[in-house]
Amino acid sequence: MGMKDWETEAVTAVILAGGSGSRLWPLSRQKIPKQFLCLEGEDNMLAATVKRMNKFCAPADVVVVSSSEHAKGEAYHTLEPYQLICEPIGRNTAPAIALAALYLQHQAGDDAIMVVLPADHVIQNVPAFHTVLQQAIAAAAEDHLVAFGIQPTHPETGFGYIQAASGVNNNVPENSFAVAGFTEKPDLATAETYLSAGNYYWNSGMFVWKAGVILAAIQKYLPAVASVLTQIQVATDAGQDFQAAVEEYFAQMPSISIDYGVLEKITAEANKLVVIPCDMAWNDVGSWDALHDISAKDAANNVISGNVLALDCKNSLFRSEGRLVAAVGMEDICLIETPDAILLTKRGDTQRVKEIVEELQQRDAPERLLNLTVQRPWGSYTIIEQQAGFKIKRIEVFPGAALSLQSHQHRSEHWVVVSGTATVTCADKTILVTKNQSTYIPIGERHRLQNCGKIPVQLVEVQVGDYLEEDDIERFDDVYGR
Image (cartoon, rainbow, N blue to C red; front, side):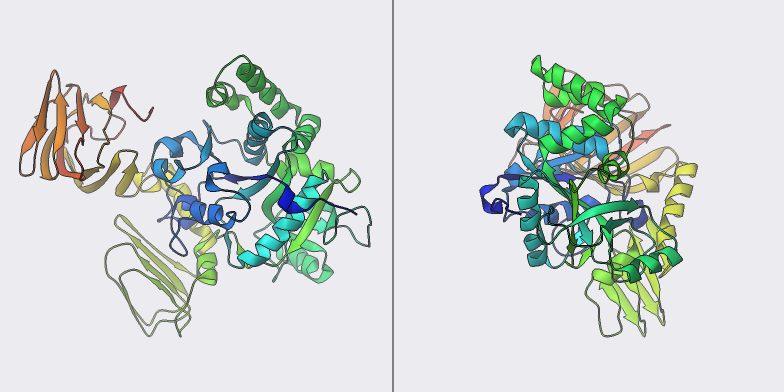
């Protein structure tokens, strides 16, 4: 069938960046999950996803859907270059995609083509991805909804599958097939059957469609989502900011995936939904085993990153984020070191890391949430030591940045500046504190730390008190909206 040339179509990359990445603990944490980390190559996973779209749209045209917690916390600077939609609470892929479609409809109308991409996948054959994306954009321009189906290489039980309809169909775009159905993660015997059948593909979670087409499908099949979209639409038409309307109404959304809520139902509509088979060295990097699979290896099939000394080891992954990791005679293991946690697991068992995170959740352990070095919009802090009654941090404040005006009910703070010049407000006084100088913040006193200079301010903070957690902060003013 005839299709428009993809180069005539303006497209927007909609990148879903709200996941938790718990299977890549201890590097990935709840407050800074894998999509914001550098796991393979020099770019973090979100930046690498954006870079793959450079041929089709500029970074300024990228829309990222993420959580408010990430956007105001550790991922602030990572997300800053893009158009951002913040979810106040996680509600799965259907509400996230629905929000982005409504946003694009406001910006460019029903015919705006959106390329939906997870932020945390790796595609090593980028030219193959571009070829398939060109085909998908052309098909979307003709009002098809397009799914990317990854050609399976083995009977994988960790992915969902898309079944392509058998036989020739002249009513679908070239190089694509009508979708006959979706299947959740199968058992091994079923996955082996799918592999031999030849018309089942891994569901990549990548889609291309017009904003108006997917919104019409959501209206038809997910009225509970559509109802919330209507509330947001009415509010924005009345002059409310789009993000403010999202904050007000989004919690009413049901938690449901786009596959289950919409796409599985569209398969009953003749040839509306199509799948394009892909072979692009795709990996969802859902475990440390997956990272081993995609990473460069030495002669003994080891993946080694950081300060590692491995003697007579093979088929293993060693990653150090700081300390020396030394291993002798190890085989088929994954060992990941961070400043506050070490993970050791057999290869093949790394999906069970999620169980570790669940146990940490039960214990309310801080290691599930944050690393010892925590990124903030104004800079970063690193916990050097913590014992009963005191905590020691190293704090860095970017030039021109400022912490919130705040107070603490349970701790005092002593600040010693080791580089740069800090502007310190405490109560009704503002002073400059330079290298080798110190100042004291009493319990309950309103205070603020600023860097009005041209170089970073680094200081050592000693907290003293009976309660030293981060939620003992009362903010009175914050330039970052926290």
